[in-house]
Image 1 (spheres, rainbow, N blue to C red):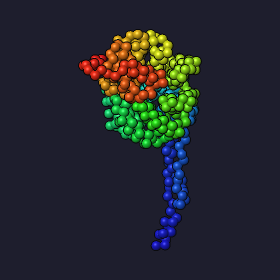
Image 2 (image 1 turned 120 degrees about the vertical axis):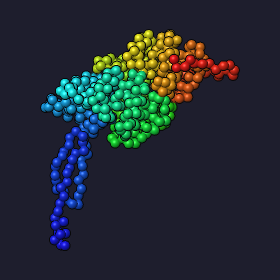
Image 3 (image 1 turned 90 degrees about the horizontal axis):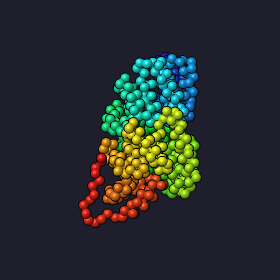
Image 4 (image 1 turned 90 degrees about the vertical axis):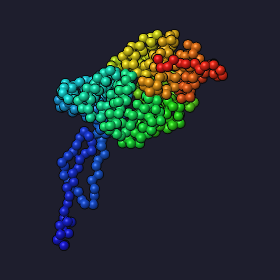
Length: 469
């Protein structure tokens, strides 16, 4: 018995240590460890975390993206025939360009992804999916659909392709295809990234409660701070759209705490603080967002906030920044015609806005474009045609009926111009019910118009608004 127990004491066990990082696996290394100590795996590097995020199609932290890009650039310099590294490099460029609103990264991404395809022209799903992601980032939804469908044809069970196609179909106004694609995705995969994509589809179909629940579950299940912060930012955006300002501000602040580079959440703070009347804080939040992510939409919002405060010169500076960023986006192959059309309709040349947005509608007819084109037509003095697009933007089908205060306001103002007073009163009231603070410029205009319309008459047949059109 003593000899047997002594042999047990002399026995040591080999332990296999393997890195958990998705891009660098240390396998087959055997080490002897004392019995009383356990192996503590090293924390993954920021670049390894970014690699895992990029491959999984979830948001990545900016420091990790920087590290990943440098590591992959070194790899392709020494191994130029490494198609996978070229594809990962391209996808990292796309994500960095999106996070920084810097379209200069998009041509680099395209070059890397096309190099990957030239190195491996057959069955290169990763490069095709990367090109779909790049096209979505550029708001080129026809190209995103084309690349995404090609990737899906090669590997129908590769779940990360489905969110790319959902974005493309939504941008093209193909809402039934987006819903079918989501159904296929949820049949293949569950988890935070899928829940976040489902939330976007629910929102587009007017199911705000379902969208909020999905985002809450996505944020709770996210593994990395940058991923959780991205889902919280979307939850804050949804809460703001529904007029839940305290909830929105809480989500935005937590997102910034988790990821200080979450500039969209800083812009959300600015939007919400302005609605709460905390103007100085709102201006600071918007300035910080624009410094980190000079997105044309943030410049438009900040300019309108300055305009509402009676500061036209400060507004003009931000509108100038908007034009500059739109020009830079075009140089990088990105499409910012939608935000430029919105700007021109209210602050520039409405007829130029109509021309731009007609071309955008012809190319990718989503509800956002319908809303912007309808408003531009109204501002250009064509309310009859404007109403057709406003109805498309607010109809229950095909999109499902986004409960968007701005779109309802646009429709109500168009109907008022056409002397359809009952419909106008109804839609203006609905806009203010959804979110009474949806815009520092237009929410006061909605209240003024509603007061001018007065209370509905006690008698008479209810006015019909003509259906969706």
